[in-house]
Length: 567
Image 1: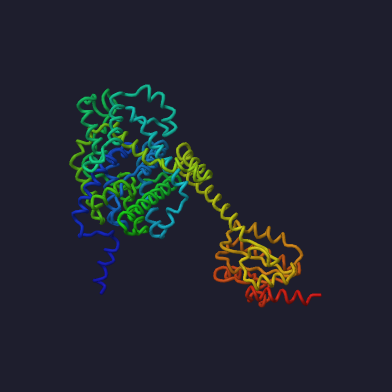
Image 2: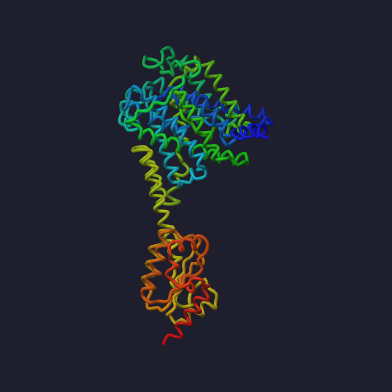
């Protein structure tokens, strides 16, 4: 029995790999590999880690995420958002420790993978993407703008200036003044191909590959193709890419930078989770399946961990590659595995050809990715939907581009949540009512309204409805303080679906104050978690049992009866 169960447990670790759709999966893998090649080269060069890092990142993240993830048709590789964060990580640690900066950056990638694996094991998958859309949109748009700005140097035929976004913006006059015409032409031709390729031709070959081939051929024939790579008078090219398998890179920790490494790894890991799970939802909608979010996070984490160990860029689920894979027939993880194997063969056999690719062409491809990342649809409509939401989005964009990615998300989520809580509190505050007559639009049976009228203003029904979050505590106190001269108060919790700690304490204060003023107090209708919370607070110990076990109608009857006997 034990022997038979072991293989089942091992297979459960793997993604859904099927042999029922081999032709579709292989064709999907080939198509996704064709699209991944120019993107991986562009992101590798843009990040500062080199083309090889982008290529091996596409292979390793894609392979391990396909093997161990939870979305059969998902294609994982370096993406624009992940590349932008990785670029900042490399620049930051290279400035702090020029000798070991790259090693530290790849260690951050490994740690990001560890964070993702931990998120998966802790079953946090369903919570990862629960952020306000205004913050996600602003963050992604900010990343798109960063990617556009960072490509301006290579687009104009020069290296990326030091200082990231601010450095590039400050150097923009010099970049324009020293622009190299052949490379600007190559970059513009690349953008033209990416934007203007007819739909019929896109079905035959992806625009990115067409731009890569056309730009390289033009640079070798008409546009000053005689010069070498870095420097020189000719077109700047990728240059030599190390052939063979990548070397293992052991983790390198600079203890003085340990806290920054952990923070950057958490940001990179969280961004990868959001990127992957949002793409997984898109894959589900196309294939009408349901992914396993926690398993997907573990697969993504393993992919990034291994990629960091071998000097590859971090990656996540890529929307373009995933959609193309599904459209080409990919349905199981076999498509992602075949894509990784095909890319590996290309890297090992054709790096000499890739060395001739102009950097301006890759800059054009990366710049187009940046334009596509910007959430233009929401930018155009945000101010019509919600002024406060639009302001949050613009704030997050500004902070992302000009200040810090972590600060942008943290401040954006904080402000969005505060505004949401304020709106919910205002709405729920209307559900706190103190009623002493049967007149008005009350959610009460006629016989209970009649009992209130018999009380002649001396019997008060203090009614709470819905979810009582902490923002409602103020309304409870305000409503209670406005109570006039009454003899009995019935606190009605029948319709309370949730009673937060702060609101429970406000109810307790109101009950205690009513008791101190000599009023007869009833607490009725509490059930479930509301009842348990009040019991744990000890509220029912302050009242006779007959004042907490009655129904609302019985409590009103008793209050009116006592009032009738009072001279």
